Image: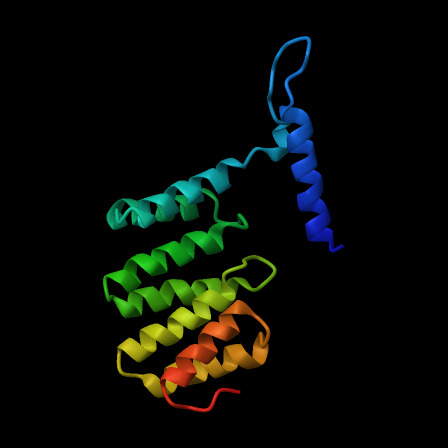
Amino acid sequence: MSTMKTMKRTAFLMLVFWTIPNQATNAATPPPSLLKSDAERDVIRAQNLLDQGRESEALLSFSDFVRRYPKDYFVGDAYYGMGEVFFRRKQYNDAIEYYRKIIKLGSQKTKRIEDAVVRVGECLDAQGKTDEAIVEWEALLRRFPKSAGAVRANELLLGKKRNPL
């Protein structure tokens, strides 16, 4: 079993154990280690605003997140959310700027790199720069060949009638 699966299983078991009411106090409080950090809660709130279509509020929340937690693991999620706001508004150059910030963070600091590369390609394609988009997607296929992002890039390449890698 992988380390991540083991950690998730342990967290689940702790949650189950700690949420069984204590006979003496009838309390059911999970341990603090299972509660989300302030940073994680803030980025989730901002994402919820975006999911609700409240783009301006989401953009402010994501910007505030980056200002308050510039080195947090979830800063990549905040940049991605900002890129999504601009992508939805068809402000592709602004969207690309935020997606590229995610790529610059590196895979050790964010889980959103593959998504960001796919979106950069989609922005370029929407601007009529299909050849540049194809270069982005092909690079993703070479770097992360078995990833979910590679599957999406492959689908986009097939849609452009180019041979995927």
